[in-house]
Amino acid sequence: MDDCLNVFLDSVLVSIFVIQEFGSGSIKNLVGKGYSRRRIFLSKLLSVMVLAILFQAAVLAVSICLGIPFMGWETFSKTVWMDAALYAALQMIYGVTVAVIFLLVGELTRNLAAGIAVSIGVLLFSSTLTAGLDLVFHGLDIQLSNYWVLDLMSSCPVTDFETGFLVRSIVVSLAWLVIAAVLAAAHFQRADLK
Image 1: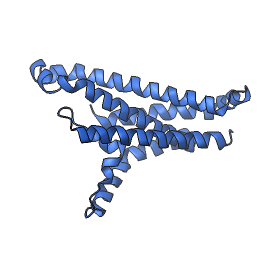
Image 2: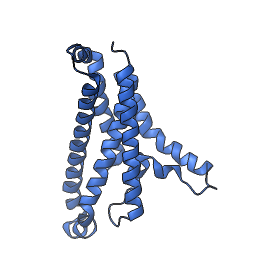
Image 3: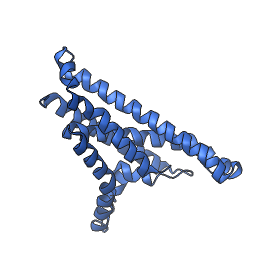
Image 4: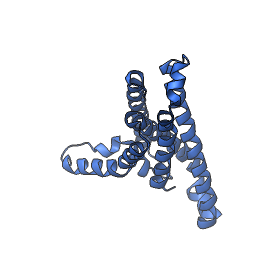
């Protein structure tokens, strides 16, 4: 699965989905109808999460359908198929987390062009930044790239999962998901609707 292309498309889809309501004015109508901002944001958050899961499932299905003819059933079944469910679960966790981060970006920018640009910037430059920070802090016993969801997504093995990697992936992904969701919700509660 090409994580960069997958996340790139995810960033564009989430940005369009989230920011479109601000550009068209439909978000003002929802708030004006008496729906609480908390409920509106929760529905937006859940919709983005479902969108991410469906998108990840589609990409995984395409990867499997293309992997079998190119690798051959023997090789594919021996190397990949055994751990496919665990790999798919991890990719869905990563995908949902990244989608919520893009939701935060969309909520902060509220402009389609800026939202897409900043989301792509996060995608393209954040791993480079964490790799640079790893070099700066190489004398310490910590690698910051181990705690950024896009780095975990790109370094995720297809088979032979280590327990430490699994636990770190789940904890880091859930932590980033909660941080992004709380920040986006706080901004949505307080921001002016234009």
